[in-house]
Amino acid sequence: MTRPRMKPWIEGIHAYVPGKSTGTDGRALVKLSANENPLGCSDAALAALATDHAPAAYPDPDAAALRAALGQQHAIDPARIVCGTGSDELLNLAAQGFAGPGDEVLFSRFSFAVYDIAARRCGATPVEAPDSDYATDVDALLAAVTERTRVVFLANPNNPTGTYLPREEVARLHAGLPGDVLLVVDQAYAEYLEPGEDDGGLDLAARHDNVLVTRTFSKIYGLAGERIGWATGAPHLVDVLNRIRGPFNVTASGQRAAHAALADHAFLARSREANRIERGRFAEAIEALGNYGLRAVPSRANFVLVLFEGAVSAETALAAIGEAGYAVRHLPGQGLPHGLRITIGTAKQMDEIAAVLRALCGEAG
Ligand code: PMP
Image (tube, rainbow, N blue to C red):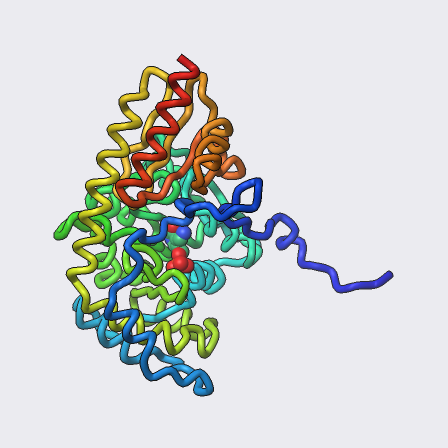
């Protein structure tokens, strides 16, 4: 039998398996597995989605109004901004535009799963640098750079660990890279940092020819279903992404919703504050179970990676949390069989999950 043969570099890629949203008995679970905003999205975005609906017309291929609004908000020339079908698309395009067979794409261990896929999709070799207790280790990344390295991905804050690399460390990473290596600073969770705090990624992207920053409307803006992300960097970098992206890659409704969401600063502030409070309370609840081997990796994002290093295993906890009606993320395929990544939900949801874990420890203790 003859049939089309996949390229050899595609063979190592496995189709993405999303977190479960139904229990073993088929009942719907509350989804705390995809880092979505428990408050939903801004009312202004909902109103924009409800108006002007004209699905027969193609969207603006350049997302000009949205890019202008982003440019104004971040003091960036809109010509240095490109929008994508979620930031996922832009991360993939960054790898595809600058790496190929024989090249290496570098990132830290325990970082976002798409980096590995993005590298393999274009035939490049994914290279993982060691972490330092679940955080990105700049020295380890720099030590892993070879003459084949073409792209370095840094998620900051990082998924699935939630750890954050301060501005000086990001600058040190950039300064240590050769000028022909592209540094992609993935800021999917940047809006969860405190106001005024930032990792300097946008400044680097404004001043250097080899830095791209990606952002998304999927997380704090609560628009994951609309699939909108954006990237900014030097014109020659943006030009490469524009050449290889789909011509109508951001839907009309997505462009409208994102534009409206940008102006709703109150919604962002509310979401950030609720996340900060619940994340703190949840981390304390986990710390109180330290004697049973539970540990919360310090998070600056809208989720917490809980490690199970004692008698209670992550599998047991996953099952018990599922029994209580919640889906959270177990990532054995990413080297974390002993961890659960739990999205920060409402106070009630976090209390219920903490109670499940306390009960398990009681049984174990
Ligand atoms: N980067 C990171 C670090 C993420 O966690 C995610 C979502 N899980 C993304 C990028 C992609 O999000 P989206 O494609 O929805 O913008």
